Image (cartoon, rainbow, N blue to C red; front, side):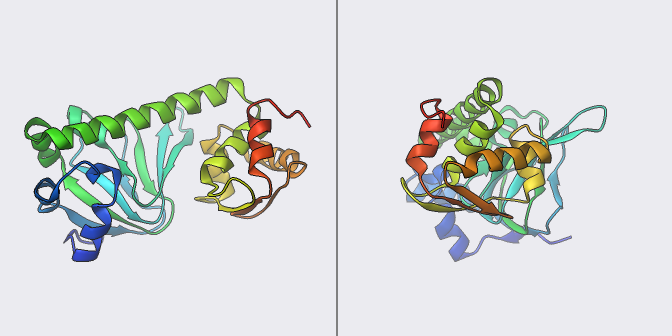
Length: 233
């Protein structure tokens, strides 16, 4: 198992560009980073499991993390993917409650670990940090509401299209790379792999061309109209 290491200068610089630090001045950032540690994980390795008590909050430095849920019957699903710059486990740490999901390395990853007690102390003592936490948790809540709404109201093809749009960078043609293999992406979207294949086939008519984890969105504006129900072609 890889060891936790003291955060280095390059990782400190990257961390201060993330949403957790966007309201913090240099002094407040140092208060948070002086206790931060870094660790690498191999693909498939668990970071934590459902029900464990939180020891750290995390920032993704490189790679992709999958947050996963598990039923009593042994079924698993992907709830969300997290990529560089994103923070996670903040709610469990702030409330000092067990994790509701598991976190696993979807690729080889590097994570910044911030001790849970340090996070809770800063919430109590640092107004800037408290505001950052409110913003991040509010953003996570809105993402969850959007995901639930899509699951209830959109077709498989619309859900896939909307997800691709969140990954696309430009308003027109854009190359998109899926965060993980298609089987896990299907789980994230509430589909079977077969349903995902049919959804990709449906979107081909709208200029979405995919092979493996690489997808080309030729007309993001038209795809967005389809996902919003404004283009039934």
